[in-house]
Length: 444
Image (cartoon, helix red, strand yellow):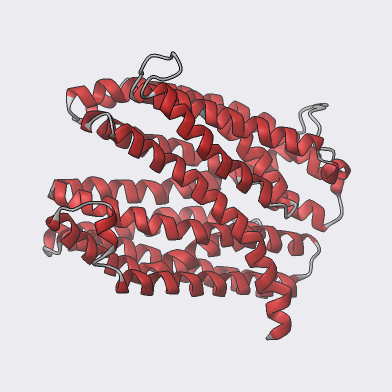
């Protein structure tokens, strides 16, 4: 056991921690925006919430596409084809910029139909311009993601963390200037928050590009921008991995978004409680995403070396680590369920509902952790199509209908909808874990 801890648990944790902190840095960008926008009124805050809910549904497709880079680079390094890493980077950059432009067009069209969501007129007006401004930030975001996944595939996870953390300072400063009107700039309100986000993501893209291109550490992988030609086999590999991963994330995020819509049918108190509980659950989920990313890196590298015993052990250690940490968070939710909601609001009705939801959240912490890490280890062995189909079936054919029946037909309300999510997450955790061990056992 001691050798296993030294060989797998500690290296996985060392890779995971910077990724998790970086993920929290990304989350904090949205949290800070909400806090600072909230200072100028309820309508801008409502518009920001609506836009972020819509934007993530599109942005998650881009994130999924970029995640294909990590296992491909880790695999190429594992088989000692270092020159292929630079080729993958350049081809991925080409694809992701084109994909980003497509997503910008989709969001612009989406903005024209916000009124169909039956939201208050003032919210619709502010939402439209804010969404269109934010759409342009997808281009630098996808550039950042491309380089981030490239260096993470090479087991270098700290630079993206530093950039994400520092970006929060730039975002706060940008919000202070553009939202409230400072340093001679007129107060632009919610649109100012969009401009600040765009500039922040522009900084993030430029910073990581300069780091990767200038750092001697990556010279052997040739991360230069010397684009020679369109490499169709490499592009095909990226698309075959990236598109299923993008849709897998889309199905999962869309399920949670639709759950919020169903909760809104019950009442504003329940929706506010849901926002509090999901905010806390999302924070712990970021830690798991770090472990998931570390699992992809290590499993992918060992898979490239055809060291299948190490693939199995590194995957198993990541799953156990994810389950252990999420168990600790779950216990924390149970112990602090009545106190944590007070950090967000003073309304007794909202606090009462949120404290109940945190008990449900405590139970799905382990399931959420295992399904997230399970997807990470499966990505490491290039298995993405079946997980994509399974994600759709689990959340949309099982989880959402169960949540609806429990919430409305059986009268459990918002707790019933959350139990539906718990059912979906638990099935996903069992399926992905079982599939990994089944597939790798065939290689041993």
